[in-house]
Length: 362
Image 1: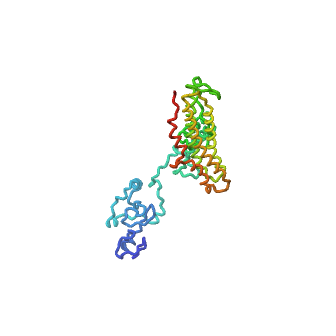
Image 2: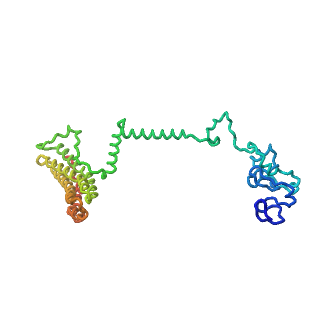
Image 3: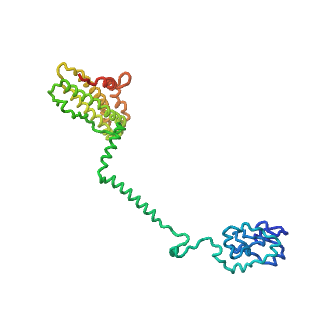
Protein backbone atom coordinates (compact mmCIF):
# COMPACT_ATOMS: atom_id res chain seq x y z
CA UNK A 1 0.00 0.00 0.00
CA UNK A 2 1.19 3.56 -0.78
CA UNK A 3 0.91 6.30 1.84
CA UNK A 4 -1.18 9.17 0.39
CA UNK A 5 0.83 11.66 2.51
CA UNK A 6 4.52 10.80 1.85
CA UNK A 7 3.96 8.32 -1.07
CA UNK A 8 6.10 5.62 0.54
CA UNK A 9 5.29 1.89 0.69
CA UNK A 10 3.68 0.80 3.99
CA UNK A 11 2.26 -2.54 5.18
CA UNK A 12 -1.23 -3.31 3.90
CA UNK A 13 -2.73 -3.69 7.41
CA UNK A 14 -1.12 -0.50 8.80
CA UNK A 15 -3.44 2.19 10.10
CA UNK A 16 -0.67 4.79 10.62
CA UNK A 17 2.23 5.48 8.21
CA UNK A 18 5.53 4.56 9.96
CA UNK A 19 7.31 7.27 7.94
CA UNK A 20 5.17 10.40 8.30
CA UNK A 21 2.67 9.27 11.01
CA UNK A 22 -0.25 9.93 8.64
CA UNK A 23 -3.48 8.12 9.64
CA UNK A 24 -4.33 5.48 7.07
CA UNK A 25 -7.25 3.58 8.66
CA UNK A 26 -9.53 1.43 6.57
CA UNK A 27 -10.86 2.34 3.18
CA UNK A 28 -14.34 2.56 4.63
CA UNK A 29 -13.19 4.97 7.34
CA UNK A 30 -11.23 7.02 4.81
CA UNK A 31 -14.26 7.40 2.57
CA UNK A 32 -16.55 8.39 5.43
CA UNK A 33 -14.62 11.54 6.54
CA UNK A 34 -12.62 14.35 5.00
CA UNK A 35 -8.90 14.86 5.55
CA UNK A 36 -7.75 17.23 8.39
CA UNK A 37 -5.33 20.08 7.58
CA UNK A 38 -3.29 22.31 9.90
CA UNK A 39 -4.70 25.81 10.19
CA UNK A 40 -1.19 27.28 10.45
CA UNK A 41 0.94 25.71 7.70
CA UNK A 42 -1.61 23.65 5.76
CA UNK A 43 0.00 20.26 6.43
CA UNK A 44 -2.34 17.25 6.43
CA UNK A 45 -2.87 15.73 9.88
CA UNK A 46 -3.89 12.27 10.96
CA UNK A 47 -7.03 11.75 12.99
CA UNK A 48 -4.98 11.05 16.13
CA UNK A 49 -2.72 14.08 15.87
CA UNK A 50 -3.27 16.68 18.55
CA UNK A 51 -0.67 19.08 17.09
CA UNK A 52 0.83 19.67 13.67
CA UNK A 53 4.05 17.62 13.27
CA UNK A 54 5.55 20.45 11.20
CA UNK A 55 4.71 23.74 12.92
CA UNK A 56 3.40 22.54 16.33
CA UNK A 57 0.05 24.32 16.03
CA UNK A 58 -2.90 22.54 17.74
CA UNK A 59 -5.05 20.47 15.45
CA UNK A 60 -8.40 22.01 14.42
CA UNK A 61 -11.00 21.71 17.15
CA UNK A 62 -8.52 21.02 19.99
CA UNK A 63 -8.48 24.56 21.40
CA UNK A 64 -11.24 27.08 21.62
CA UNK A 65 -10.92 30.42 19.88
CA UNK A 66 -10.50 32.24 23.19
CA UNK A 67 -7.78 29.93 24.56
CA UNK A 68 -5.79 29.20 21.40
CA UNK A 69 -3.48 32.24 21.55
CA UNK A 70 -2.57 32.03 25.25
CA UNK A 71 -2.10 28.25 25.28
CA UNK A 72 0.01 28.31 22.15
CA UNK A 73 2.23 31.13 23.51
CA UNK A 74 2.68 29.26 26.82
CA UNK A 75 3.80 26.07 25.03
CA UNK A 76 1.04 23.91 26.49
CA UNK A 77 0.44 21.91 23.34
CA UNK A 78 3.33 19.54 24.11
CA UNK A 79 1.40 18.03 27.04
CA UNK A 80 -1.71 17.00 25.12
CA UNK A 81 -2.24 13.21 25.23
CA UNK A 82 -2.63 11.08 22.12
CA UNK A 83 -6.27 10.40 21.12
CA UNK A 84 -7.61 6.89 21.38
CA UNK A 85 -9.59 5.12 18.67
CA UNK A 86 -12.82 5.71 20.61
CA UNK A 87 -12.10 9.41 20.86
CA UNK A 88 -11.37 9.58 17.15
CA UNK A 89 -14.72 7.90 16.28
CA UNK A 90 -16.72 10.14 18.62
CA UNK A 91 -14.89 13.38 17.80
CA UNK A 92 -16.71 15.89 15.68
CA UNK A 93 -15.50 16.12 12.12
CA UNK A 94 -12.91 18.84 11.57
CA UNK A 95 -12.98 21.47 8.86
CA UNK A 96 -12.53 20.40 5.31
CA UNK A 97 -9.65 21.50 3.10
CA UNK A 98 -11.91 23.95 1.32
CA UNK A 99 -12.93 25.51 4.63
CA UNK A 100 -9.32 25.85 5.72
CA UNK A 101 -8.35 27.53 2.49
CA UNK A 102 -11.38 29.83 2.43
CA UNK A 103 -11.33 30.95 6.06
CA UNK A 104 -8.69 33.57 6.83
CA UNK A 105 -7.05 33.33 10.24
CA UNK A 106 -7.21 36.15 12.71
CA UNK A 107 -3.63 37.51 12.80
CA UNK A 108 -4.09 38.86 16.33
CA UNK A 109 -4.97 35.41 17.73
CA UNK A 110 -1.41 34.04 17.58
CA UNK A 111 0.85 37.12 17.36
CA UNK A 112 3.84 37.35 19.72
CA UNK A 113 5.00 40.89 18.83
CA UNK A 114 3.77 43.85 20.80
CA UNK A 115 2.11 46.44 18.62
CA UNK A 116 3.39 49.84 19.77
CA UNK A 117 0.95 52.48 20.78
CA UNK A 118 0.57 55.11 18.10
CA UNK A 119 0.66 57.87 20.74
CA UNK A 120 4.01 56.72 22.17
CA UNK A 121 5.84 55.73 18.97
CA UNK A 122 6.94 57.97 16.15
CA UNK A 123 5.36 57.02 12.83
CA UNK A 124 7.59 54.90 10.61
CA UNK A 125 9.07 56.59 7.58
CA UNK A 126 8.10 55.51 4.12
CA UNK A 127 9.67 52.15 3.32
CA UNK A 128 10.97 51.67 6.90
CA UNK A 129 10.38 48.50 8.90
CA UNK A 130 8.49 49.56 12.09
CA UNK A 131 9.97 46.65 14.05
CA UNK A 132 13.60 47.19 12.94
CA UNK A 133 14.19 50.91 13.02
CA UNK A 134 17.60 52.11 11.83
CA UNK A 135 19.79 53.47 14.59
CA UNK A 136 21.41 56.82 13.90
CA UNK A 137 25.00 56.71 15.31
CA UNK A 138 25.04 60.32 16.53
CA UNK A 139 26.99 59.43 19.67
CA UNK A 140 29.69 57.55 17.76
CA UNK A 141 30.13 60.41 15.30
CA UNK A 142 30.46 62.89 18.15
CA UNK A 143 33.05 60.70 19.91
CA UNK A 144 35.09 60.37 16.69
CA UNK A 145 35.05 64.15 16.18
CA UNK A 146 36.21 64.72 19.77
CA UNK A 147 39.08 62.24 19.31
CA UNK A 148 40.17 63.98 16.08
CA UNK A 149 40.09 67.38 17.78
CA UNK A 150 42.13 66.07 20.73
CA UNK A 151 44.81 64.57 18.47
CA UNK A 152 44.95 67.75 16.41
CA UNK A 153 45.34 69.88 19.55
CA UNK A 154 48.21 67.69 20.81
CA UNK A 155 49.95 67.89 17.41
CA UNK A 156 49.57 71.66 17.38
CA UNK A 157 51.11 72.00 20.86
CA UNK A 158 54.08 69.81 19.87
CA UNK A 159 54.74 71.49 16.50
CA UNK A 160 53.82 75.13 17.14
CA UNK A 161 54.86 75.14 20.85
CA UNK A 162 52.65 78.12 21.81
CA UNK A 163 53.81 77.96 25.45
CA UNK A 164 57.53 77.73 24.67
CA UNK A 165 58.11 74.54 26.68
CA UNK A 166 59.35 72.15 23.98
CA UNK A 167 62.97 73.43 23.75
CA UNK A 168 63.46 72.74 27.43
CA UNK A 169 61.99 69.25 27.06
CA UNK A 170 64.23 68.50 24.07
CA UNK A 171 67.30 69.74 25.93
CA UNK A 172 66.48 67.55 28.94
CA UNK A 173 66.01 64.49 26.72
CA UNK A 174 69.33 65.11 24.99
CA UNK A 175 71.08 65.57 28.33
CA UNK A 176 69.72 62.32 29.75
CA UNK A 177 70.56 60.46 26.53
CA UNK A 178 74.11 61.78 26.68
CA UNK A 179 74.46 60.55 30.26
CA UNK A 180 73.04 57.09 29.54
CA UNK A 181 74.78 56.48 26.18
CA UNK A 182 77.93 58.66 26.05
CA UNK A 183 79.48 56.57 23.25
CA UNK A 184 76.46 56.89 20.93
CA UNK A 185 76.16 60.66 20.69
CA UNK A 186 77.79 60.98 17.27
CA UNK A 187 80.59 63.25 16.18
CA UNK A 188 80.74 66.45 18.18
CA UNK A 189 83.31 69.16 18.27
CA UNK A 190 85.59 68.51 21.23
CA UNK A 191 86.67 71.52 23.18
CA UNK A 192 89.06 71.72 26.06
CA UNK A 193 87.18 71.77 29.39
CA UNK A 194 86.55 75.28 30.61
CA UNK A 195 88.21 76.20 33.84
CA UNK A 196 86.04 77.15 36.76
CA UNK A 197 86.14 80.91 37.11
CA UNK A 198 84.04 81.04 40.27
CA UNK A 199 87.15 81.42 42.43
CA UNK A 200 88.77 84.22 40.45
CA UNK A 201 89.78 85.93 43.63
CA UNK A 202 91.85 82.95 44.80
CA UNK A 203 93.33 81.99 41.38
CA UNK A 204 95.41 84.82 39.92
CA UNK A 205 95.43 85.43 36.17
CA UNK A 206 98.34 83.64 34.50
CA UNK A 207 100.24 85.18 31.59
CA UNK A 208 103.16 83.92 29.55
CA UNK A 209 105.67 85.59 31.85
CA UNK A 210 103.99 84.79 35.17
CA UNK A 211 106.00 82.60 37.51
CA UNK A 212 103.64 80.47 39.56
CA UNK A 213 104.30 79.85 43.21
CA UNK A 214 102.45 78.30 46.12
CA UNK A 215 98.67 77.92 45.79
CA UNK A 216 98.66 79.53 42.33
CA UNK A 217 100.91 76.76 40.98
CA UNK A 218 98.81 74.05 42.65
CA UNK A 219 95.52 75.42 41.27
CA UNK A 220 96.91 75.76 37.75
CA UNK A 221 98.42 72.27 37.67
CA UNK A 222 95.27 70.69 39.11
CA UNK A 223 93.16 72.35 36.39
CA UNK A 224 95.49 71.06 33.66
CA UNK A 225 95.47 67.58 35.23
CA UNK A 226 91.66 67.47 35.20
CA UNK A 227 91.65 68.79 31.63
CA UNK A 228 93.80 65.89 30.43
CA UNK A 229 91.62 63.35 32.24
CA UNK A 230 88.44 64.83 30.73
CA UNK A 231 89.57 63.71 27.26
CA UNK A 232 88.93 60.05 28.08
CA UNK A 233 85.19 60.21 27.38
CA UNK A 234 85.56 61.92 23.96
CA UNK A 235 88.30 59.42 23.11
CA UNK A 236 85.87 56.55 23.78
CA UNK A 237 83.45 58.10 21.27
CA UNK A 238 86.25 58.54 18.71
CA UNK A 239 87.19 54.86 19.05
CA UNK A 240 83.58 53.80 18.41
CA UNK A 241 83.40 56.03 15.33
CA UNK A 242 86.65 54.54 14.02
CA UNK A 243 85.49 50.94 14.48
CA UNK A 244 82.24 51.63 12.66
CA UNK A 245 83.55 53.78 9.82
CA UNK A 246 87.15 53.10 8.72
CA UNK A 247 86.04 50.40 6.20
CA UNK A 248 83.00 52.22 4.78
CA UNK A 249 82.91 52.19 0.98
CA UNK A 250 81.49 55.73 0.83
CA UNK A 251 84.38 58.19 1.04
CA UNK A 252 82.19 61.02 2.37
CA UNK A 253 80.93 58.74 5.15
CA UNK A 254 84.52 57.92 6.13
CA UNK A 255 85.42 61.60 6.18
CA UNK A 256 82.45 62.39 8.42
CA UNK A 257 83.35 59.57 10.84
CA UNK A 258 87.00 60.71 11.05
CA UNK A 259 86.28 64.33 12.02
CA UNK A 260 86.01 63.54 15.72
CA UNK A 261 89.52 62.03 15.88
CA UNK A 262 91.22 65.01 14.22
CA UNK A 263 89.28 67.50 16.35
CA UNK A 264 90.20 65.67 19.55
CA UNK A 265 93.88 65.52 18.59
CA UNK A 266 93.91 69.31 18.08
CA UNK A 267 92.28 69.83 21.49
CA UNK A 268 94.87 67.63 23.25
CA UNK A 269 97.67 69.48 21.45
CA UNK A 270 96.25 72.78 22.73
CA UNK A 271 96.38 71.42 26.28
CA UNK A 272 100.01 70.34 25.81
CA UNK A 273 100.84 73.85 24.63
CA UNK A 274 99.19 75.27 27.74
CA UNK A 275 101.25 72.90 29.92
CA UNK A 276 104.46 74.01 28.21
CA UNK A 277 103.64 77.64 28.98
CA UNK A 278 103.51 77.04 32.74
CA UNK A 279 106.52 78.59 34.50
CA UNK A 280 107.38 77.60 38.02
CA UNK A 281 109.87 79.17 40.38
CA UNK A 282 113.26 77.57 40.70
CA UNK A 283 113.24 74.51 42.97
CA UNK A 284 109.42 74.54 43.02
CA UNK A 285 107.85 71.55 44.83
CA UNK A 286 105.42 71.24 41.91
CA UNK A 287 108.08 70.72 39.24
CA UNK A 288 107.60 66.95 39.32
CA UNK A 289 103.83 67.36 39.11
CA UNK A 290 104.26 69.49 36.00
CA UNK A 291 106.41 66.78 34.36
CA UNK A 292 103.80 64.13 35.24
CA UNK A 293 100.96 66.15 33.72
CA UNK A 294 102.99 66.75 30.54
CA UNK A 295 103.64 62.99 30.26
CA UNK A 296 99.95 62.15 30.77
CA UNK A 297 99.01 64.62 28.04
CA UNK A 298 101.61 63.09 25.72
CA UNK A 299 100.22 59.59 26.24
CA UNK A 300 96.71 60.91 25.58
CA UNK A 301 97.90 62.61 22.40
CA UNK A 302 99.59 59.43 21.17
CA UNK A 303 96.41 57.43 21.74
CA UNK A 304 94.45 59.83 19.51
CA UNK A 305 97.25 60.32 16.99
CA UNK A 306 97.49 56.58 16.18
CA UNK A 307 93.79 56.64 15.22
CA UNK A 308 94.39 59.69 13.02
CA UNK A 309 97.29 57.91 11.33
CA UNK A 310 95.03 54.97 10.55
CA UNK A 311 92.36 57.38 9.28
CA UNK A 312 94.91 58.98 6.95
CA UNK A 313 95.42 55.64 5.21
CA UNK A 314 91.70 54.89 5.08
CA UNK A 315 90.84 58.28 3.59
CA UNK A 316 93.57 57.84 0.97
CA UNK A 317 91.61 54.97 -0.62
CA UNK A 318 89.75 56.58 -3.54
CA UNK A 319 86.01 56.39 -4.08
CA UNK A 320 84.89 53.20 -5.80
CA UNK A 321 87.89 51.14 -4.72
CA UNK A 322 87.46 48.32 -2.20
CA UNK A 323 88.45 49.56 1.24
CA UNK A 324 88.37 46.07 2.73
CA UNK A 325 91.30 45.04 0.53
CA UNK A 326 93.43 47.66 2.34
CA UNK A 327 92.40 46.54 5.83
CA UNK A 328 95.85 45.36 6.92
CA UNK A 329 97.48 48.52 5.61
CA UNK A 330 94.93 50.75 7.38
CA UNK A 331 95.29 49.02 10.75
CA UNK A 332 99.11 48.82 10.65
CA UNK A 333 99.60 51.98 12.83
CA UNK A 334 97.40 50.40 15.53
CA UNK A 335 99.49 47.23 15.53
CA UNK A 336 102.71 49.24 15.75
CA UNK A 337 101.47 50.84 18.98
CA UNK A 338 100.97 47.48 20.73
CA UNK A 339 103.42 46.12 23.31
CA UNK A 340 104.53 42.51 23.71
CA UNK A 341 101.26 41.68 25.49
CA UNK A 342 99.19 42.98 22.55
CA UNK A 343 98.02 46.15 24.37
CA UNK A 344 98.37 49.80 23.42
CA UNK A 345 101.44 50.92 25.39
CA UNK A 346 100.27 54.55 25.77
CA UNK A 347 96.92 53.35 27.14
CA UNK A 348 98.63 51.02 29.62
CA UNK A 349 100.95 53.75 30.89
CA UNK A 350 98.15 56.34 31.15
CA UNK A 351 95.83 54.09 33.17
CA UNK A 352 98.69 52.93 35.43
CA UNK A 353 99.81 56.45 36.43
CA UNK A 354 96.86 58.82 36.06
CA UNK A 355 95.40 58.41 39.55
CA UNK A 356 98.77 58.35 41.27
CA UNK A 357 100.01 61.52 39.56
CA UNK A 358 97.30 63.86 40.75
CA UNK A 359 98.94 67.02 42.19
CA UNK A 360 98.96 67.39 45.95
CA UNK A 361 99.14 70.69 47.77
CA UNK A 362 102.58 71.42 49.17
